Length: 424
Image 1 (tube, rainbow, N blue to C red):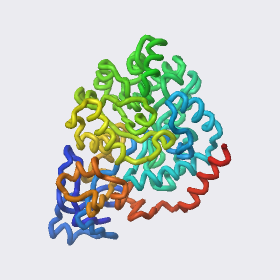
Image 2: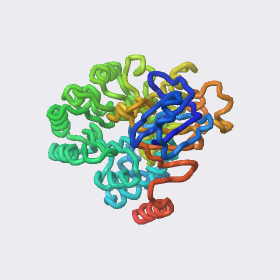
Image 3: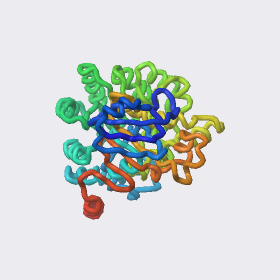
């Protein structure tokens, strides 16, 4: 077992309250949280002990929407609106990608995720075998989301991936999904709905990211993307909508009724001028909220601290209300909400029997002092520089600025630069 002692612990079990005590892990799971008795300590056998020294232990962040291997397009196509950015810059470059590219570019993303306290991503991209291999080698948890587009024939890939990746490795899972309404034929949407019904499985997709996307869908089908998906039965078993910037009241009601999570990506939406998602209104209605970074091509930083701050700050600005979207809302979305949106129900909180996906936050830093309200400090003044340790499935992958992923970081950086240079 591994022992963390002298710690402040934010379990996220229903609140952001903090207790003082210890946390023990046994293999990939949490074995104890609280204050141990003398008898428990005498009986325990620890292979490693951490003296937290008053640092904070909390559930790791989960990145509920990203395209990990888009790291190769970081700072490549900035300062453009989404449709021009996507169709003129991103898609042509993505056509040049290979599986080997995905492998190295994913590893680059994993390094960045770990520095920001993330232990899992909900990834929609290409070459799933190479993506899975990179994450497994790094010891990182990944949920793959189907990204099919085009015609009905492509739904077979979804069924194949569901069979091929689920239940085969503890760190890897796969969920039904397609890229977006505007890249899918109607027949593909029908086929996805039928597959979801056959498998009784949730479906996730980009949804209502821009005003033009919604307007074009209404013009084409007479319905918003959410209403269209609902009419086909795509959301009958839940799922997630990525971005959800331009949502109607009816759209939100559908999300509540069908148990669909709204995954906000505030940095990407702001940078691409897509708009500000109605997070407060969705929260008022009871929509499940999660948080993601999107890919490094549009963000450009894979940093959950920045996402949490922007989530709250943009809501306050949009509502002209400094009390809108308190810190607890953002912190819960980045941890518990994201875990549930990804189907990682055993990775959501710090409790006995849950997966040991844990981060240690260094509170002995200027931006964390004084300790008036630690949850508020994390959201309003927190930084990835405060991440002292990142543990996934009971294994420490990042500690005090060093990676423990059995990979040469210099090689990863060199490969990423080689890849983008070869494409230009």
